Length: 274
Image (tube, rainbow, N blue to C red; front, side, top):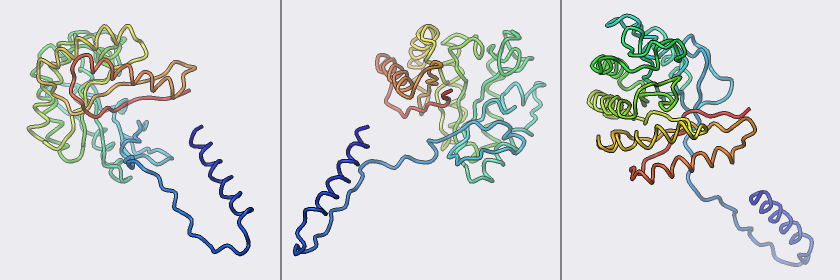
């Protein structure tokens, strides 16, 4: 509203000056009206694209792609221990690159049925995927395989999706911090340029957020803060607005500050209205 009012004021003032200026007045050069600030890179306007793994794409401009719900989770790719089916992930990455979108964020989450310590059928994206691996060395091998195959192609990795919600993770804050540290060390060794994004957390369900996230931050702190970017999902309630989203983001940042977390970029890796 302030910008709109300013523009209206400027237009009105210019019109008034034109009306009252004497006919004999010498023409004067109008000062340029400039905007100050930083240009927001296109990569910050990312999207999830359903069926990107079979070649589908958005009908609007997209600056980056997050791979989740694309048949590209650990559970989808390593259904049999030691056997990796890269078909969906190869296609999704190739599709994104063919559209000129080279900023790709992959979520590594989703424990396969053979590896999970919790076979709950309620888990997403597939039954058992919310559990922790019974042997964390299996996670290490998975992350190593992905980072090696997609070095220079996948630019960012996120260990887990909405780690504070039991639908996606039934692990403890300490376990999630351990997975994050392991992923960070492996990825940085193989592809130092890749960005490691913190496991995302939902913020609207404040009870689940407050129960999980502060202990997770303390566990992550004990491991030396092994991330490059913070991440949260600021979905508003059904009648929420962008203002609601901003409030959820500020609440998240407040928790980070209280934990003494380092100042890093903050990515909201999922959000919508409707």
